[in-house]
Amino acid sequence: MTEYNWNERYIVLPSKYGREIILYTNDLRISYGNKESIKGVSLEFEKNKITSLIGPSGSGKSTYLRALNRMNDNIALARVTGEIFYHGIDINVENMNVYAMRKHIGMVFQRPNPFSKSIRKNITFALERFGLKDKKILDEIVETSLKKAALWDQVKDELDKSALALSGGQQQRLCIARSIAMQPDILLLDEPASALDPISISVVEETLWDLKKDYTIIIVTHNMQQAARISDYTAFFYSGEVIEYDRTKRIFTRPKIQATEDYVSGHFG
Ligand SMILES: Nc1ncnc2c1ncn2[C@@H]1O[C@H](COP(=O)(O)OP(=O)(O)OP(=O)(O)O)[C@@H](O)[C@H]1O
Ligand SMILES: [Mg+2]
Image (cartoon, rainbow, N blue to C red; front, side, top):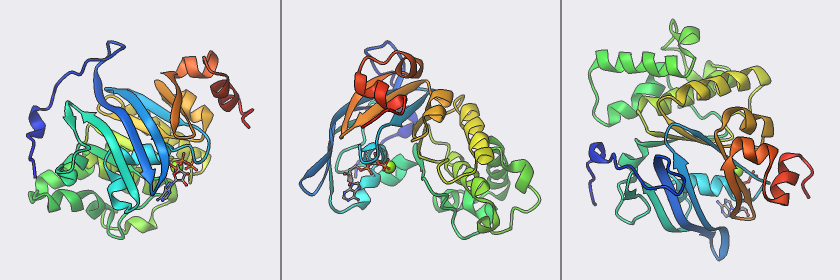
């Protein structure tokens, strides 16, 4: 297995738009059996920006997002071809150490999925497995990750309580904290707010907005207001292709393609 020195990966990638690109895909194709669900998607993601992936159900948003940290590897049927460049490293190669890679590209799922362990352990579990034993450092990471995920004040006195006793919105923020604890560069979120009430949604959105300082965020959302509120760039997926990609403002005010306009204004189909 090729082991990369992940610390020496800061290569500024060239971009059509003159931006600093941290991740891009080139002609990415994903099929399940003989059905192609992503049909050659090339997209760039700018560092420290939020990109929304929008589009109708079944258009391939989750399939594409999962490919970005090789989660489709867990699906026997799935075949992924094309390039996924992260800081100049193609992570879509056979001998990639996906566990090391996922420390840099973390994922938060639609439904909060905390481990059935204490709040503290949810954060420290993976770090301990990667060999971090120092209690003081672990405590510090627990505190800073929970602070970044806007959960610290609510749980600081009950870190040993089961994570499953938290509300849905708190569990989702714990899952965000768990990802942050690994200090990734990139956070992938698949409809992270869809199972939450409006107040929790706005807290999660504020959390993401704050996280942008330190992370590059790619988020799948069905909520057009949410995409318009929080993202810098938006990609519109339709039937396995990206039909339009632009600055979010442009997508929501003056899209170039009729299908995009219909979708963002709710007149689709
Ligand atoms: N594990 C899987 N096995 C087989 N086919 C799949 C699998 N996951 C997704 N697909 C197919 O790939 C296509 C894209 O699905 P995907 O879940 O990526 O869409 P989506 O845009 O995320 O939809 P939604 O908005 O409903 O979540 C669909 O036709 C779906 O049936
Ligand atoms: Mg999906």
